[in-house]
Amino acid sequence: MHVTLLAIDLALVIEKLILIAVIVTVSLLVAMYETYAERKIAAFIQDRRGPNRAGPFGILQPVADGLKLFMKEEIVPNLSNKFLFILGPGLAMLTAMMTSAVIPWSSHIELFGRTIHLQIADVNIGILYIFGVVSMGVYGVMIGGWASNNKFSLLAAIRGASQIISYELAMGISLIALLMLTQSLSLKTIVQQQQDGLYYVAYQPVGFLIFLICAFAECNRTPFDLSEAESELNFGYHQEYSSMKLGFYLFAEYVNMFISSAVMATLYFGGYDIPFVNDAAFGAHYGQNMLAILQGLSLFLKVVIFIFFFMWVRWTIPRFRYDQLMRLGWKGLIPLSLLNMLITGFIVLLRQYGWHFS
Image 1 (cartoon, helix red, strand yellow):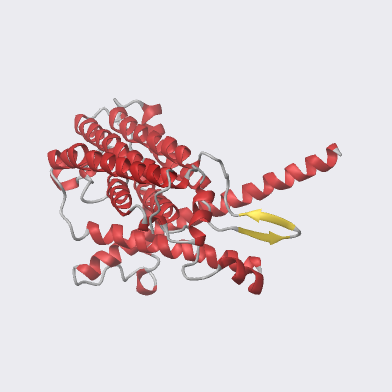
Image 2 (spheres, one colour):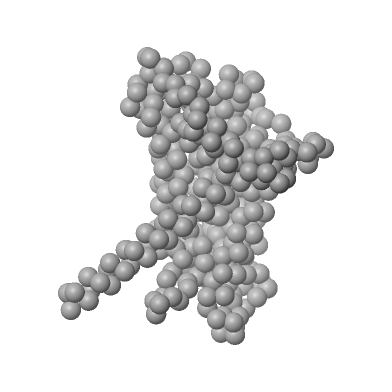
C-alpha cells in the first residue's frame, strides 16, 4: 500500500513538474514575441514597416535581441552592492513567473488513464496568493535602484514603488466587490461560476475598469511608465544594468503583462470558458481532450486581445506627469473603488433579504 501511494505521489510530482515547465516555456516565448508584436503594432500605428530584416517578416527579431543581450558585456558598478545588484532583476523575474501557478489555463485532459488538471495549484485563496506575489515585485524595483548606488536609479525606484503600492490599493478594493459576488477566492471556482451565465464584467463594469487601469500601473505601461521614462527622467531604476540583468527587468515587464491579461480574462471574462458554447455538451460529443485544447485557445485569444489593448494604449496616449499619476490613484480610483464596493455590498444585502434583480 505504501509503495502504491509513493508511486501515485511520484506520478503527481512528475505531472506538476511537466506542467510547470510547459507554462514557464510558453510564458517566456509569449514574452519574447510580445516585443516583436509591440514593434509591429507601433509601426502600424505610425505608418511604417517595423522589424523586417531578421527572418521572414522579421519574426526572428526577438531571437536576435535575446542573443544580443546574452552577448553584451556584463557591467557591475564598483560601488554597488554586488549581491543585491544581482538579486534585483532575479526577484523581478521570479515574482512575474510565480503568479502563473494559480491560473486555470484549461479544465483537464485525460492521458494514460490519468486526469491531468491544467492548473499548477488550485488553492482556495488563489486571489490572495496573486496579490501576495505581486506585492513582492516592488522589492525587485527597489532593490535594483538602491543597489546600483546611483541617485537617479534610486529616485526612479522610489517613484516606481510608490506608484505600485498606490494602485495596488485601488486594485484590491475593486476586487472586494467582485468577491462579494463570487463568495470564493479560488480562480477555478470563479471560472466555473461564469460558465452558466453572464461573465462577471457584466455585473462589475466599474470594478473591471478600475482593475484594468491599475494593471497598466502595475506593469509600468504607458501612461504609467514614469519609473522608467528614458528621455524625461534619465532612464529609470535599471539605468546601471546591462546584458541579461537588464533583459530580466524587460522580460519581467512583458511576462507581467501576459499574466495580468490572463488574470483579467479569468476574473471578468470567464477564463477558459468558450463563449456561446455549452462546454459540457461539446466535451461529451467531441471528447474531453479536444474540449481542453479549445478552452486553452479561448483563454489565449482573450489574453491576446488584452495584450493588443495594452500596446495600442502605449502608442496612443502620452505619459502622465507624476503628480497627475498619484492624484488619479489616491483621489480618483481609490474613492471610486470604495463607492463601487459599497454599492455592490448594498445590492448583495438587498438580495439576501428577498429583493430580486434581473
